[in-house]
Length: 333
View 1: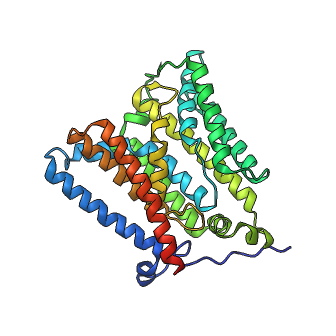
View 2: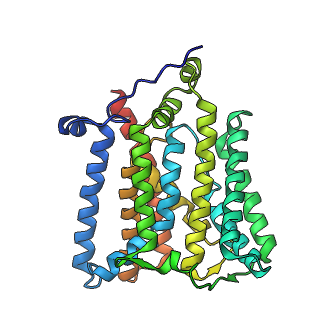
């Protein structure tokens, strides 16, 4: 059967004029998020004299970078109808693998490459199980999350491994023209993803797979290969984020990123990506990542208990899912 290019709605893939942007549900949600972010900045600026400083703003951008990387890659995956709960576990395993290999005499950059390849293999397993065997992505990635976390604990005995290496730590704490390296890498990733999603055939396939996978298959589109590729990209993003986090902390812990999984999912959904697939925006995800990072930073400056911060993140996640359902109902009407 001949392949047919999927027709895309204006708010999912094709750039339009300003009027089209204003009418686009996805673009409108990004604008609303930007408005909310500005309000958040104003509120915390009033409540804390230490908030709106260059040092604090750069700290926020650096601290959310590894979360932003995982959320960036998770966005097209969810748009395509998938889900990856193992990405934070892969981040933890990556740092552990790097630390263990380096302690055995392997050059650090070779260790990083091996760790990223292991992450890619985890993504490939997720993709094959979820697509060809048609297993529920939530169950598949929940299972691999447990397996990966278990291996990380086995390799370290549950202990934190030091990783203070000249050159390597620059990835997590260095600066480029005064801007933290993690923030620069995050922005570059979002720009590349935005270009791919809006201007390439692969990006159109992603939206088609999430919009109606069966119809797309009947049209001859490579739905399964695209979904597998997205699972691999998601896992690789976890490996890169884990490398960045280990370099930032100067140490590798098995569960270093585990507590941030909910933040990653919340950012993707809050950013306008539908859990049912077919709709989303990487820019919305980026703004949502900044909102959640700023919220965490502001509450810390106000000396709010970490326990209440956990409560806040849970509430934000529930609100994000609720907003997603309201968006879909409004769109259907």
